[in-house]
Length: 217
Image (cartoon, rainbow, N blue to C red; front, side):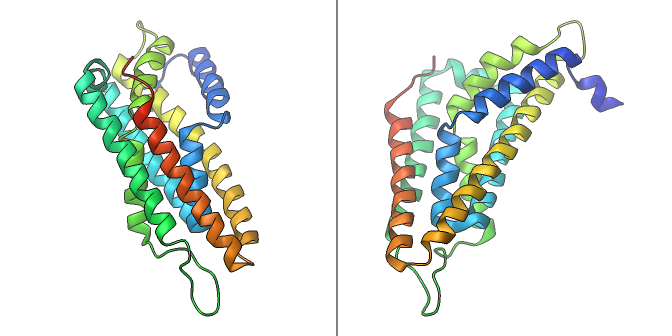
């Protein structure tokens, strides 16, 4: 009952869910990150990356709901620091993937060693330091809020959670598809090394694009 009371009106919620699904279906930075990680670490690593990235987005949703996100969006300095930190971290992950692209055992090809906790933690940082997501939440979520209904922060949180859940489903699909393609390439050591290298290049390119493009507006 309490959850229902915190939700926006059903028409608003459905309209937002539809808009989110359309937006998420178009491959963007999050999809490229997930594909890159799946090519390097396989389906399990890709799915863990999706979970970690989604957890970071949920923290952003909470921050926006509490008004903290507005500070990030309105401050050029804070926005730039977060943007460069996230870009730098993506580039670091890409470099690491390329460095370890030839890692294998004597009997079979396997992903570069990463604990589940580390995979989740790395992806959480990427999701948390994506400033464009903060700007999106601040710009779009309020348009679907009913000011005469439940408290606005609760409605913002509910909408943001809907977005995160839809993104989780779509990104997981991409992770499974890329991970399956990786399994096929794994039949050849040279092919899987190239695939891991390609995943690393994608993450480096994504980090460079994030660093060099966009503004707080």
